[in-house]
Length: 370
Image (cartoon, rainbow, N blue to C red; front, top):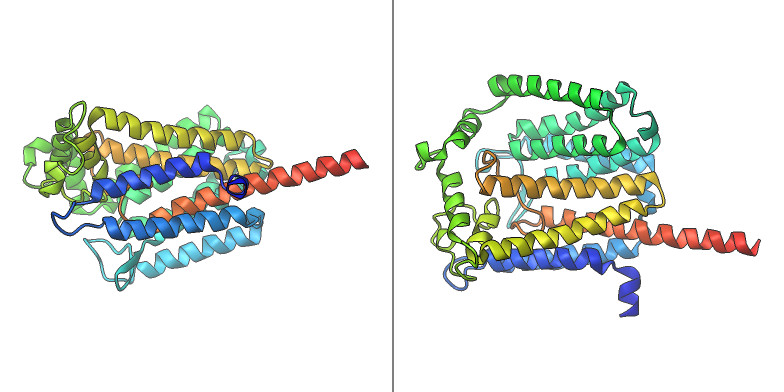
């Protein structure tokens, strides 16, 4: 137990594990048909082992510029290669190796966090210079453009929010923020007419009034809202969600797992779920404030922004507040690559915090002895 407390940060690991187990419980069919729950259980075991290993290893080498650029380059190559793969559900976004699929966009998110953390740790005091905003944005755009081509609008939005969030915490001026808002509006206009596929434009149009085409483009959003609303205060009970278990709600184990959860657990369960995320996010903020280096702080905040962006978009889609984009919710949604990434990121954060504290204690002891 002493060793576990020394090498693990249970205030990070326990909320993540609880959220993962809730996700597995929600996607379980309880013998009523095929379920992704057993496979997700295996992925959770693998992801937690990755967390333990990374927490134990001294990960301070991730601060090296050569490694950061190498990870970025690998992410770029993987995203370029995946475009050559056969499309799955209309998008070339996965590498498939038999029963195992890997989405390189998940690895690319970690690469962007590392790169921005490195870039901003050196230049955050100069963030008032618009040149740094342009350069950092170009790095992100290099990967986001490849994801948009897949096409994957959901992850493209995540990359944009990740960059904007890290710019914001680095101290970007309000004037530059307003300018970026104008650029975003112009880029959105161009994207609407030139970048989006017809079905993506249809999804956005149906978002305004999903009930107008509940058997077509608005079906998913409409069924998600029914699922959330029918949960009422205490929910229908675990395993008794009719919208999910009877397959009225499509992709309830991945893209709409929050709606399936809300139907079974109700408002009380949603409060519990958001409280777990709140505990996790609060701990990340605390670690960032106590970080030994700027890189550690920016990396931790980058992971926080990534998880929060996924949560906000996924919940917003389920509540009908955002267009359907097929975005997972952290730790809960079915899938191995995003789950391993999330636990790996927590492992790196734990390692950086632990070894930096140890180095500081050693330095203080040497100074005292000297």
